[in-house]
Image 1 (cartoon, rainbow, N blue to C red):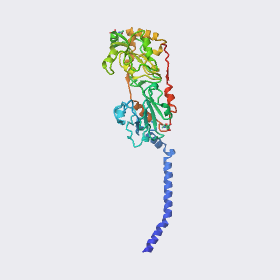
Image 2: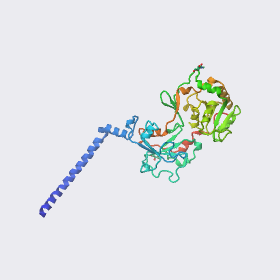
Image 3: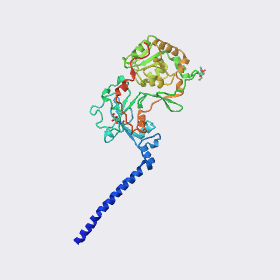
Image 4: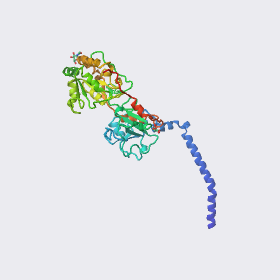
Length: 409
Ligand SMILES: *[C@@H]1O[C@H](CO)[C@@H](O)[C@H](O)[C@H]1NC(C)=O
Ligand SMILES: *[C@@H]1O[C@H](CO)[C@@H](O)[C@H](O)[C@H]1NC(C)=O
């Protein structure tokens, strides 16, 4: 009995060697086979397919399968939702509420939405504010993550120490047209094609008509307008010295100054203030507080919604932002007196005045969410394989401004 067991054991252990060998051979063969099957020689389509599925490419939305996650690190001027409607938006909200063409993203301000902070594909920092006191920056960072410098204030208003953050950011998201993700204060959309025409560094505009633009509404309003220019302003002393320009203009005609820096007041959001622009004023002064590339504020876009001509003063090349002949750019004049003379001429001639509204037949104002563009960007071809960062974010940001305008006071 015990003999039989022992010999059976012997038989088994005698088999063990060759069995192990066979097993090893089998494993090696399988590995080689797997390698061969997975090799680009035999398998290029499959590899490409997987790459596309990972989001390695693509223009066609069907190949965008995996969702990218975006964490909003700090708040946006006290708004933890950055003007979005929820704390967390998924692909459905991006598609239905924001109308994003590429919507396979999650945007959240909940730091624990994913189990670890290095799992987010992108972390957005609002750089016009201090970072959260308790946790200034994420404790861990993955080299695959994109840290995003998001800012809507001009450099003079960036209340943040950027020289501590050299080499920190991978992408920029600002109003500047050379940002990785452009976040404008407003957009001009072609009514016929639905395409966003501007802001753009080289927009293709329709030409203003040569024949007089005949808009009876504008003609009627023009006839009732009795005041020259309105200016709504709350920062009285600025880098651009717009206050000096306004003061000089006042030697030619009356500029009504509403807000902290003037004698008149009109509550923000009061519909009467807007209507007054239609009925009383010929011009609306849209003077920026800093002379910086591409910098124009939303006030300008607000003015374009009214029946009043904006007189702009800023550092932007306005032809990248607004349709031709829809505004009067102070920087196009040699002197303040030339500007004042021209405003008198346009304000005094109904046909000339109305001609500044030609664009309304072809364009409308639009605004799309920067998070749509960011989402699209995170799905761009090669996103996971390319690495970039801003080694000197401070120069990138600050070098876009100048202190003096071309206009002579
Ligand atoms: C403008 O159009 C109106 C009708 O819409 C017409 O009565 C008027 O004569 C036109 N004016 C000019 C200058 O073409
Ligand atoms: C982002 O920037 C950091 C710091 O410069 C760098 O280590 C990382 O590789 C960059 N990531 C990407 C995805 O570009």
